[in-house]
Image (cartoon, rainbow, N blue to C red; front, side):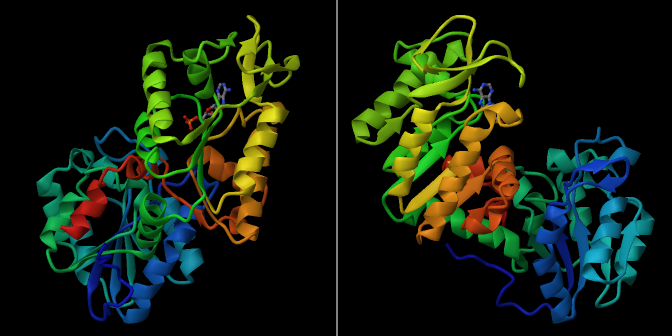
Length: 398
Ligand code: AMP
């Protein structure tokens, strides 16, 4: 893939519009995790070092799209960004008025301007071309560095690119995500294992299907495992099951069988009699869970089996927790898998982690540095792994 990144281009004297993902958690005006802001710094710093001026655009949360809402303001981001960059960040209190237009017009080289939350304007999420054209009029180069929203065809993430046929690029963060996802889809070294967890089969069907052509083994945990176990005739008690997906689970199992790819379900499960951290706990074979009990985490035999498959893998992709990871008594399986990935990397293998909960698990273990690639996108990563071309990526490549 021709990457069209900012790396080899000099942006001196340009006014560069950068779509970032500043969708950070904010509680009462205070940012509780600034990871996403930090991750956008290399791109912003490169543009400034070249001698450009920079106009930053982002969304935060899901406002109604009917104008300003204090709880979704990007003002705290402007302040934090200014601290991290060690320079002033101008902030326009709105998106679509004369004030913004004149701030953008008067912006001097070396200056940084952040626009207010784009989703205060209804056109943004509708992919409105008029709004995209307005945004485009503020600068003369477009850079997309917002991988977290690359699966959306919004005005600022995709539509805007058509106004810059020869001046559109991926930022460093986007380029890093794409390079790694391409590797996971097309050139990962074998043996290659995917570990997929999370609550529901329904949200990961297309990923599971697409991976059948790529991996040597698939390890399935979390709530979604029980729909497969039931499809195979097992008894799962009160565990989470998507009854209407049982036929589909059978189809997926058949696809893996046809291709000769190992499909590993947890042999045993740590179960509880209530959905509660303090509930009574017992281990049962996953296909013999009595009524009144539900699987909350993978059991010790499952952990051992997953570990042995992972230990002989050269590449590992992990998405989704293997149990109800938010509850301390049911987080061990997920944490153990995180540790295994750390070991695979240590032994020279390639490891990739995506999805909010798995990334949180890796961070909780202080392991993020021991993973080859930690994705910043949940939905976007899944869609990429489904084999879809993301609108935000296509818009730059077209
Ligand atoms: P997802 O958003 O699909 O990746 O799923 C993440 C959620 O799955 C987390 O909130 C977990 O608590 C939940 N989960 C994982 N394992 C189980 C399980 N055995 N039963 C119910 N929920 C689960």
